[in-house]
Length: 235
Image 1 (cartoon, one colour):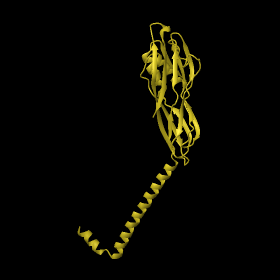
Image 2 (cartoon, rainbow, N blue to C red; image 1 turned 180 degrees about the vertical axis):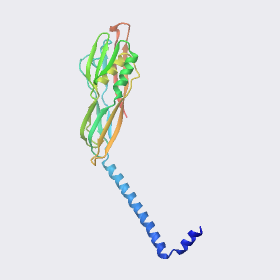
Image 3 (cartoon, rainbow, N blue to C red; image 1 turned 90 degrees about the horizontal axis):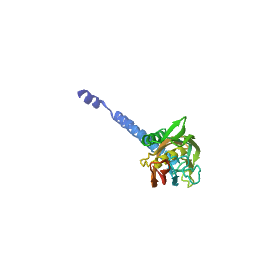
Image 4 (cartoon, helix red, strand yellow; image 1 turned 90 degrees about the vertical axis):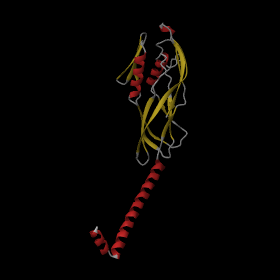
């Protein structure tokens, strides 16, 4: 303490002014740093994209027997397809966009089906879906796992149509034929960049909702018949 007091007494006016000047210089540098940081944040926000998804389509499903799972709608015998509408609601352009469906999507669907049905089994072999029942076998359905898009303009009313893999829809139809109502959601991973080259990653969850389910099932193969309507909520 005596040493500190002794040194303090030796300080001249010039020393005090010099110390105060250095302190003010440090404060100025800190102020400049914080100002530049805030400017960088504001600039990033000015270029920041934000991807969202919506699904406007209802999926109409019909079946006339337990193995009527190949086509979604048995009336037209066609591969009905459903899409997600992808929008960029941010203020900047999104570029180099990559969409990738979650690895666990199909395995979760398969596990529920195989654990809750007796006459239908599903398997994933080399990224292809194979379905087998006591009366029918269906295999080789490709799983579209990835999709890419060069850019998506901001605040555009025009959406990018991203196809929901048909394999998922077939699995949902099997669940509804078997009256399994606890159906799991899907996950979609999205990565993209802004015009500065800054990278972004996000995940969107697509939850199926049963709007209508009319199903009859008996002890015979032909007694399984019904119809259902699904839509998807996204968040």
